[in-house]
Length: 513
Image (cartoon, rainbow, N blue to C red; front, side, top):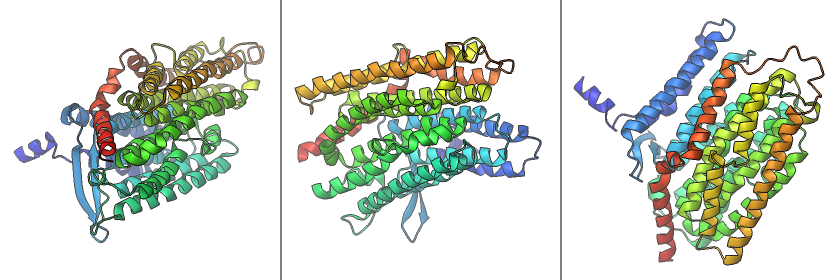
């Protein structure tokens, strides 16, 4: 008993394996539950999600040292002897935030999926399977395991898109899988190339690979392969066109998972693999990343007002805000990278909330197009209020998390030692134009939906305002958005040591060359 107690209260307990496997393992029991409507199924799923979130929080609170930039809670088990394939898991300051975000958003998305009644057992099982795949991606310390988790997570998304969605759901699901599977080919080639290069003993261990150096031409080839894979998922223009179609057709709980977590996997991969493993190539490509990120902010901000579909408009705003993450990663400064990591968390909360609000509005009026809406402020004042507040968070209102994240990215560009003076003036100027365009599409969306008299003059007896469940979901997201906006160290303190470690390794690498 003493040994069991000591194992459970020390870092030798396999916390991460349990956290990764628990959602999908318990998800299989859904198919054996008594089928009484979908009350039992959804209650069980929410219970599992809450338990998983509490387990994750406990493990990180009591077994993770914030001031240690090294990998913690590490696990390393031989899995397949023939390939020399290991089950390697571990967390550091970079993966801590995305894992907690995954748990938080998945729990709320499960609660948001309350109205789903058609084949609800499969729906909730797929959400739990997606949960395991996403946490597995963020916790992987082996490149092949990272690839497997990356691929595994696509299957539930495809099924959620193709079975529950709008009229064009099969088209959007097919487009999603073609884009992401195409990107995964480049990821697999990069993983195998980097693992097999220059050694009689092939290794896919991220700690060992982070200390390796490659010929410049080969490193650039690896970098391009990984960049294409992560550019599809992030998404980075011009590989973004799957995103608006997917969001336009998907059920809003699926949209919460896509916008809140799935896009962040691409940004995480850029930092974890492109920056950490391939620093010399990253220094060569970083000016191009900054230029593409700036173009993305402007392009998506200009495209968004032309979208009639409410969810497509929010999707283009997501593409625009992801531009700040790309710029932060490209700045190669501790300020810029910290801003990018903060934006990953901030945008995860805000985009999930906006898609949930879009879905709850659709549930009431059965219209998905903005030019068919109007006058909703009076019949549904609570949704109107929360939609307005979270739209302000999206356009980076001071006091909200989006403002702090974008401001830190600004400072990152201005203080970058690699940028020329003209770039330090021009890039922030263009970014500022993008930030000016954001209120145009956000506020015009609010005006078209909530003001005027179009629907208010029609038959509105079936309208009902936000219920306790919906208010709980929205306030649960709003509180961290305000909390991070007022006290950003809530998130920045998690990753500050890891950011310094990545950049010091980067500058040492460049110094040797």
